[in-house]
Image (cartoon, rainbow, N blue to C red):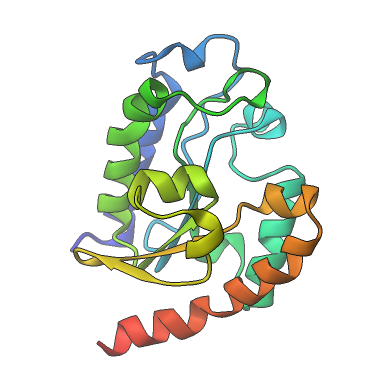
Length: 192
């Protein structure tokens, strides 16, 4: 078990590699790679799809409108961004916010896998269909959201992506209900 300081050093080294990455064409035309950020020793790791325009500008995940909703969801369960770690499936912004291509997802996979390994979270919250498909390809987000799934020694918790609730207001209440279950699931994990 690594200390928080050791985890931070490992994540910082990985972040440098991600920012300099040219394994796929996504880095072309972007301003910043977006490795992720947060508590290196977080119990909860949130994984979204990929950086948007604002995230590319600032080099930080979930800082636009979807990020504000994610922060509201965290506040709903008495957490802040500093309590969790937030990352994405792909680390550079796809052009025109298109879906990431399979080869782009594959190129970023070793980075994400290493982040999971270093942080060693108790629960991984999969935000949206892309992150859900990456970890639980047999599931469909509309049926899987709000239910925990154990795979190996990790617990995954699919939720709708905050951006989906921005486009479809009826999902907002569903997202808050799903987020409200996270502390209960975490408590059950810690007991077992």
